[in-house]
Image (cartoon, rainbow, N blue to C red):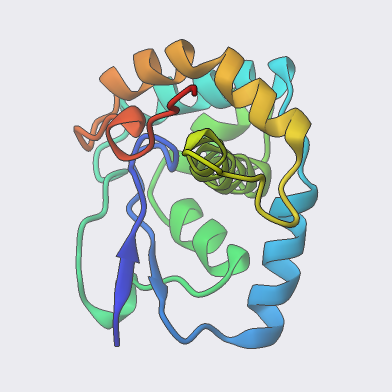
Length: 166
């Protein structure tokens, strides 16, 4: 079974492993939820606050590679993050639910990859990705890089996705 490691900065110190052969129905609904999510300044402010609060939580950065650490759905990712003592309270104190925090994380990752793809020679916006989210990503790329500097997992989200303008 192959897994894909997602940048810790966008998942706020939580490394998520996704199966290469996902559970179809959960993945389809989750993919649609992530694609429909609209990135906003208010959402980024809450996400940033939650990420900073999570940085102070021991154990928030899970890096196990065993079967128990693999998450196949948003529900499983939320449950895993909520299982870290203090994580749920830290996220909620920033004015966001754990689910929205995880969805925001994935939306930022999806959007960052789309922004990169769009910036390549002949690149186009992938189907299902919002141009408004790509514009938001480009506008806030420096803020996200700064957020990555405080990532307790030591990952900088801009290390994994760079936007190249033509």
